[in-house]
Image 1 (tube, helix red, strand yellow):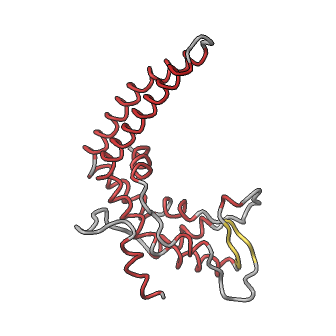
Image 2 (cartoon, helix red, strand yellow):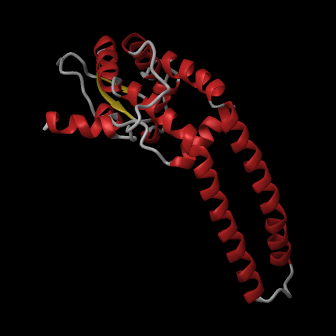
Length: 209
């Protein structure tokens, strides 16, 4: 089921960490905090106790939706596989007319896009509560990061995508997880009726200006 939680989240393309960009740029105010560390904020959220518990609850609550998604995904992969093989064989044959190959590729791409759209629709009931879970935890990410930076005397944090090499002890992610566990012991997997991803961030924006 865990792999389909990832599929659902990716398929719906939801904004999962509303404060991540601001939190990652945060710096501890104390002058003595001059260290540099790497932090994976999304990884911290995914490894928090609240997130893991919520995902376990979702596997039970949305079991029927997971099963439907898995069944349809497997069927669609089965439908696309022979088309992909046919294209590969045509590409290997020097005698294949260019127009024929292009038509097959276009048909394959069209069918693939339709399949992706169908999976997105099936994933939506799962992706929405998952986004709600991450938004609740994400609301505390900046606070958790600043606390971890202060405790470790870190003045600057960078994302893992900017790292070339890391030495032991310079990853702040576990410390952020610890702070999140204290700040957000648990979250709900049931979004309010009118809730939409990013709604909490939008509501808080005027106050921060």
